[in-house]
Amino acid sequence: MQLLEKDRKFLGRDSRPRPLEITKSRGAYLFDKRGRRYIDFFTGWCVGNVGWGVTEIRDAVRKFNGPDYVSPGYLYKPWAELAELLAKMTPGELVKSYRATGGTEAVEIALQAAMAHTKRHKFVSVEGSYHGHSIGAMSVGDSGFREWYRNLLPHCHKVSPPLDAAAARKVEKILSKRDVAAYISEPVICNLAVVIPTREYFDIVQRACRKYGTLLIADEVATGFGRTGEMFACEHYGLRPDIMCLAKGITGGFGALGATIMTEKVAKSFEFSFSFYSTFGWHPLNVAAAIANLKYLRAHRKEILTNANEMSRYFKARLLNMRFRQPAEVRAVGLAIAVMFRGKEGYGGKIIRRALAKGLLLADAGSNDFVIFPPLNISRAVAKRGLDILEGCL
Ligand SMILES: Cc1ncc(COP(=O)(O)O)c(C=O)c1O
Image: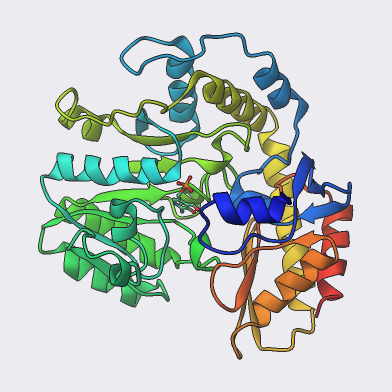
């Protein structure tokens, strides 16, 4: 049976697969079964932040010689080591990590923790956003999910972009009723084609959260670990969240792992009285990958972030000079980049398909846009080659 036939018969999917069979990944490239090389401008949606195949991380995974599995109730040294690393890396007073298998679970834990801490059950989030595919995560996501699932959490207020002072005042008004457990959003909303809130927006929202006893949850599943040119996107706004959700770039793709890190105050309020049990949360092999990846990221922090910011300027300048066939808005914070079209739907998708045929991988965040999330250490030469391909697709 051919692969496509077998895939169609046995694999559940939410859309047709792209016509590309991946067999290898290295640096800023993916390879298909014929050995054809593709420039990877989306790195699995912010997973491969340090590029694919980094020797130090690969070796740590290959040479792993620890236990096959450790049940959550035991002690395991690398768990404490990884949790300590996260506490050192994240901003503000985040200190205690709960173990998750990925981003959805990290968000789910955050929502439940906010409810347990505040004894409230309402949320505020950004309309159209994405936080994962559990019932809880979908409840704070796009309102469209409600048409499909009738059992989402009932009280999730949504604020719509633009995320400016006026939007923040609306959030403030909702929070003033003192019945909202948490405000949750990405600091820079990658899932809405890189919506960039104003500084004022978060100043007002953060102040209102403090004033009315609402927790601030930063979903940094996509933006975390350097994507926006700071280690965490919260740092652009001076945000000090009560809870932060992490996954994706935490292992650089070498393992499946998520974390929900929170302040001591929040964690202490339900310690040992609330369960976030996850059988495979922080599986030893994935923890080895995460530690190796984070050590690499910390050791090369300066050059990786400097490169991300330099390349951001280069991508932006090139994209602003491209002759798109529709009016286009270019949005970029670090290497979270999107081009949003303001014309007939489908143009963005057409560019993505043409780019794939020419050896460049892009993704979309909606119906008429494309996003670019390249490795943070991408060289100028590879960035140029990819952008030249893109220009040739217009
Ligand atoms: C911001 C954000 N939160 C949560 C998730 C869910 O993460 P996962 O797919 O690891 O469950 C995603 C996934 O794309 C995401 O981008």
